[in-house]
Amino acid sequence: SRDGSLFCTTGDVGTARVFRADTGAALFALPDTVYGGAFSAEGDQLAVFGLDRGLHVWDVHHRLEVRSLRGHLSSIAGVTYAPGGQLLATASRDGVVKIWSARQHGRVLFGDTLVTSSGFSPDGRWLATGPCFRGLRLWEAATGRQQWKVLSRTQSTYVPVFSPDSRLLYSGG
Image (cartoon, rainbow, N blue to C red):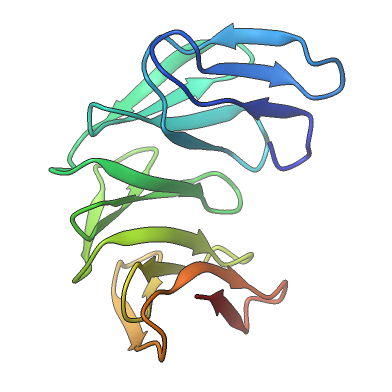
């Protein structure tokens, strides 16, 4: 979790677990294979993905799956929550990025290559996606409109990160 009080391990069916960081105590096991996930800013929700191309949102305090989000045609490669927890983004291996709301289906943002990472700006206005090859894209989170695309001088671009004031975007590759 963002406050460091919880963490989740990944693994095969029944081996992925949520733990308390201060004691190392296991809180609960996730029933499916988990490849990755993200905690909401408040730490009360955990969104995980695995083999089934779906995103599973868990209520951490009640230890229950509260929502299953489906719509990707390829396996999910990453998930991130926006500040405030109202939006989350998933990126799949076929280059599709979806922004999900708590009240509606995902809005599809198309990429042109494998999307390996994404991140919301601290103010929640922007979503940056890092395709594995050839650069970054910046999307307006509220509308899903692409604002710009920049090509990379290197072959790979990873981990887009915003400055605390949301004005600058950094990436390594």
